[in-house]
Amino acid sequence: MARTLAVVALTLAAGTQLLGQSRSAYHDYRVVPYVEALVQPWSIAFLPGGDTLITERPGRLRIVRNGKLLPNAVEGLPPVVHSGQGGLLEVVPHPNFASNRLLYLTYSKKIGEPATPKDPVPATTALIRGRFENDRITDVQQLFQSVSAGRGHFGGKIAFDKNGFLFLTLGDRQVPPEGKLEAHPAQDLTNHHGKLIRLHDDGRVPADNPFVKTAGAKPEIYSYGHRNVQGLAIHPETGEVWANEHGPQGGDELNLIKPMVNYGWPVIGFGVNYTTGLAIHSGTHREGMQQPQQVWVPSIGISGLMIYTGDKFPMWRGSFFVGGMVGQQVVRLMHDPKRGFTSRELLATDLGRIRDIKQGLDGYIYLVTDDRDGKPMPVLRMEPVERQTQ
Image 1 (cartoon, helix red, strand yellow):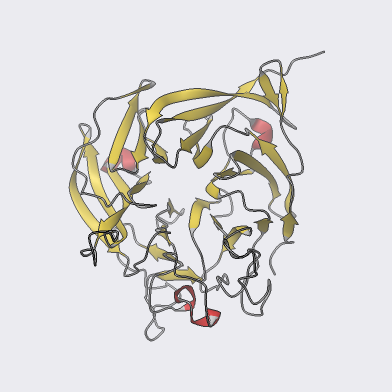
Image 2: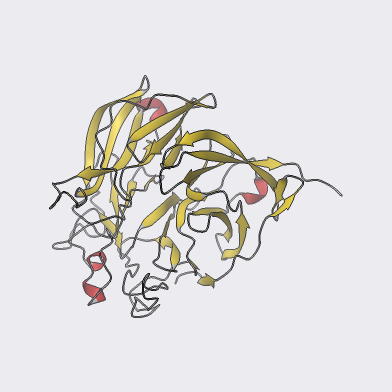
């Protein structure tokens, strides 16, 4: 049984401004610039030794060293299709990066020529890994390439579980939810649209993947019926796989991912059509389709997912953090492994489109902000502030 579903139109608590800082239920905090002037940043990763890596969708991987953004991008990456939602996406170090220096990246890869000069370049989601040494990447290998094609919704989020398996999200590529919804590609196991896949760290398909023995199914599929997962995290204590995904006009979701489970897109959901405001789905529930753990109505453009384990905000340990692009906010969800989600708290509002949210090795919380039109944007850091007494 899924934990109790919470459909909330308004956040339950909001940080308030106090003497140049923000107050939350447990910690006062401030948000300060970490680095400035990044162009469409998408993902942030922290390396042993102190370096930080940030992807820029135009195709650049940037290094922050000793608190400063280095002027030159990392060399050795393949060309990316930077168009619409595409470009250089995720960067994640291997769990044993300190010894093997392996980085994993996703990007939108060219797979053909446009039908006309006005059409976008056809692209799909690709996963590569390479060795990061001396500020460049070498020995680049492609580990996976999706067979899905479309306009956007590339997915591209990566997470490693405690057993070393790699999870990768693949969006539905904006295939319209029209006609017979059960026939939508996200419901079809013969393709990669709207799927979450599971691989070994070298790209091999695990023998115990749930659809390995299903005739016609892509063997790497772990779960299906997703729209566009933009946050992925492994629970540090339970090992559970958690993901959040964009709904359409309303209906952002946070899901507990289980093997072989159908998460319902576009047959069930809580959103409506962007242009008409009419219902997309046949309903919000159906037998055999999983309910989300949390839903945001209206949508906040959910993006990024983190489960906090650090020491800088001790009362936030175990909380889930998600970012909002349209909502320009950070939401903290209080979570108990036995009781599930107990409440929400709104933090860090009006800072821009929150694209990614990660805990640094130092225990601070880092927020990647993005501008649709490519205006240079900062990466921000949430720091604790000693609570003022009256």
